[in-house]
Length: 446
Image (cartoon, rainbow, N blue to C red; front, side):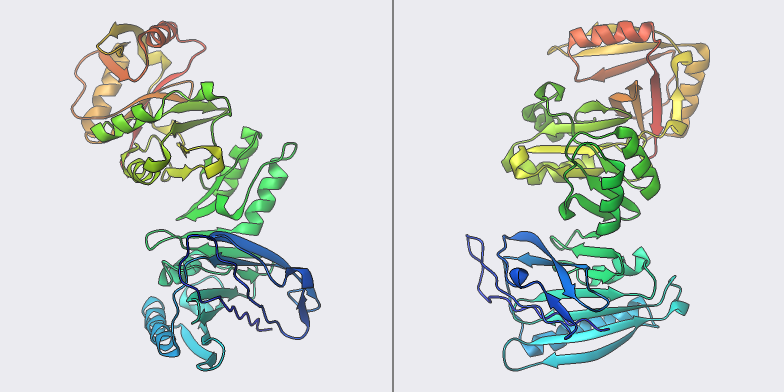
């Protein structure tokens, strides 16, 4: 059954205050929306969800609508131009794609175009698919609905078609029990998520204590499913979720401010100097997390710096950087996954450790290596010049450096932003390492 969704916007230009947007949703006669949910108010980036009542294949399912504040109209000529461009893009992406006009209105009310693109399973995709688009000329909202004969559509198909609409906002399409939510925030980034299935896994895996999860917390980046969660939960369950979805789980640090190891000024200063080093390391059960305070006015610039300056310490995939919500304070955090298969040196390779006090309350720890450890380090640095190397204690990264030359001695100097007192304690612990686990990890530059 073809689902028609017609969205009428208020047509107003950008305002400083949130716009009250009234719209109607039309369904085939067998479907009805609950009367109390016919009209909603919105803010600039809000997702409204309603349940479909009545009879029919969509009865009892959720339908979500992404609303935005800034509107820019298109007339019928503009709509035809955009659709023609999409046709050309469809044929370029997949020669078997067949775009078909279904319905359009050029006069009266607001203009819109409804069309579909059909894919054949023989084109290389795992399942045949039909993608329905409704282009609303009044508000330039682009509505995407995906239907397939099976519950799953290949992510590559969804992402490819999402790229056509970069910089637009979408309404999710319903795929049986799976909803692909596509929300583009700007022309450079796109969020795609199997929202319902991931939420169900999370809620079941993290029972006992409520975990706040919303559509804005679930992202798919390439092959990664990235979930930002707030609250206290079982990190072992987080590991299982990660392994099941082959993605990155971003864990915020504990609520106590004592767990933050640095403040904004030091973070920004180090980024300006271009020093490649982790921001803040805090142990999150089995997961070492990197976090830091940043000023609200610096969030945009710092987030950009984080994406290019943070070293990929043992990542099996790319690092994910998230900004906290406004009511949680100006916090940023990122998750590193340490790949233990790339360990260069371990406890058996460390003969001792001493601390050397430096200037500005900084310090350096010098690791004495065994003959075997020195040989391992020399071989690794010879083969990996230009790549990163990290030093971790009990899974917590204390330093990260780029390999600039071949190591030729039996000593390894480790410098970091730790105070003299803490460096002295750490040096004594490393000198008598058990039960600590000290590792030097090599990381390929991505």
